[in-house]
Image 1: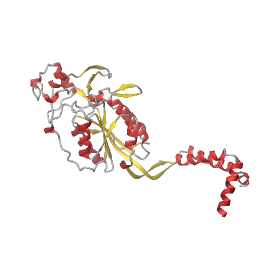
Image 2: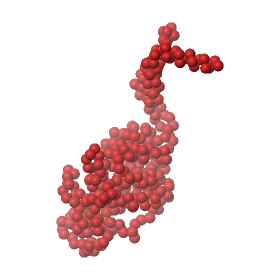
Image 3: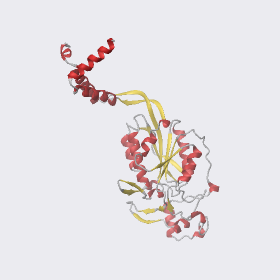
Image 4: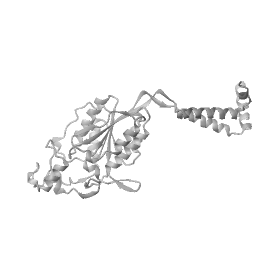
Length: 336
């Protein structure tokens, strides 16, 4: 029955095995194997300063939020199967999770679509207390899973401007949660745009606008609608919590990447700081060995089968005389 097999030379047998491996690949074989995987809670700042269009991709300017979303989507594609990702949003003082941890391969389309649809309109308040939000995100990460890492993506813009006397101290355990503080935005301060319901810029926040409702510390939180209503009603600066023309809000209508504050917060929480400058930059950051865990995970066997199949196909195209000479040399060496 196997008479045909003995008639095949080395090249023929190599081609047979290559075809067999490739046919098996068509059935998309998978197996549970121990492997390095990554668990991330990705929290994205969706406050108004993230609408500043000072990032570039494909020779066009886009907002910090759009640039961050594209970076996260690329990072999701790079994560190995078995990794889990949860998504969250930051605005005001809190980080809110919007998905449970999902396996990246089985739920890739869901995660990708969710990130693509994240929007500044989802903000439930207009304030942006960065330290409060980061500390809250770390606390939520620890509650989800002890192996979960945090990626907090923000421009670091504090709005209203913070007073050092009111800034909170990190009360968590340093090192308990690993992860990244990701800074995004231009270093040169820019005007913060006002957008309509179609994301068209209708104007920019002026310093007088900020001073009319300047709050900081633990003052009451106002929505963007309430603040714009105050502006329409002509609230004077003397009615604002700081009084008229407070020094704390000088240049508060401008926004740039606050690297100093983010680096300080990263050091305080023992997280790593990364400045996001390229779309693919998060790929390596999210797949760092320091952030990995070993776990039995579903593994696609096709790369393991396709690689030897390609090598066997290469062997098939090598001249038979050369292979026979090589084979004879190997046998002679073993006999010696």
